[in-house]
Length: 150
Image 1 (tube, rainbow, N blue to C red):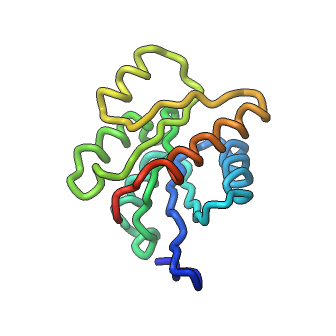
Image 2 (tube, one colour):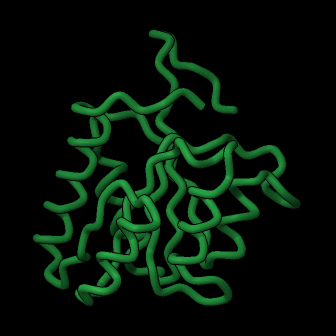
């Protein structure tokens, strides 16, 4: 677990389940410039996401995230499967899940909410819009919302 700062604040722990290295880099850059103290842990597929959340193997000492950014289209186990497992697990279901995906399919949106996603965000293609969207997510989840304790 990350040690608190001198003022007692602990970083917000974020799990980023995303297989696109460019998107991971961009989200990290935007969040790095944040006024919100955060620590981003990224995994490239759904199998790793579940292992991280359950603190298995190499993730045994990792902190429980306060928020999950989840891509739907990942290798090994897609985001829909990860979301289903997270929301079915009594120890994990309270962690808010933000779907961040390029999918505009209505069936993906409906299914994500049916599986109890907390919100569904389409990743913009344009860099400036992507930056703005990540900032808006950050502002909402880290200033307007009270996250559950880990």
